View (cartoon, rainbow, N blue to C red):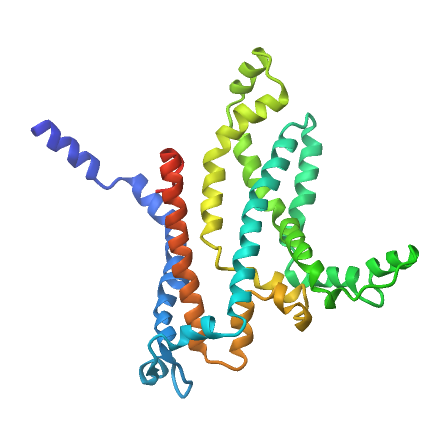
Length: 314
């Protein structure tokens, strides 16, 4: 018993390494407290008719309770079904493509013999990730403008009539999906390339000795070893299935009313409602999105745990 108690004291003793790790984690901890935990007090606005007539705390205290009335506009709106359909539909497509396309390209780049060429391809694919949607929307406008757009100029050379792209909803689901994949491709690919770089090279040497081709190495060696990261990225993506990139769905279509049925999501609707509605409705929407996102993460993790316990996040 004395030896065991002594070992326990050694394990619980605070060491210099613990102090160093604590200071290393301190900036991140402070950031989360200030910008993630303290703002959670604002969730109370989702249940109040928030009125601005003094200081913030005074406004919160004196604003009337409304119960769940702030949540009703998301479901009672005439466009509620269209908005929810767009949000979930686009995100389902984004989740599939944001995994399939970067993984495929990471496998292809990982097979390149020239390391310099691989770095050039990575850089070119990663650059769009740093562009803001305002800049991207200007680039799209240069292509799709009715008068001077490159697309209509190309159609004119073929003898076709110009198309008013911002008035034609049938094209925009393809445009939005392409822009999302194009802009986020580099980030996802870098994550998977880092995973591939961390795989022990002796596995591949053994596979070559056994006569495995490049395709067989990718299928039976690289992909299984990447499974944990792929599953983690999938679960995180599922957790944001009720969120959309505001810049993609508002800036790129340039808020065209003709594209409402194909380009309006929950985030865009909330922004438009803020012009005429109260802050409580925006808080209610954000609260609902967070709760549903947490639920979908837990469900996705539960499904993964049932299929492969080792791949689950928790």
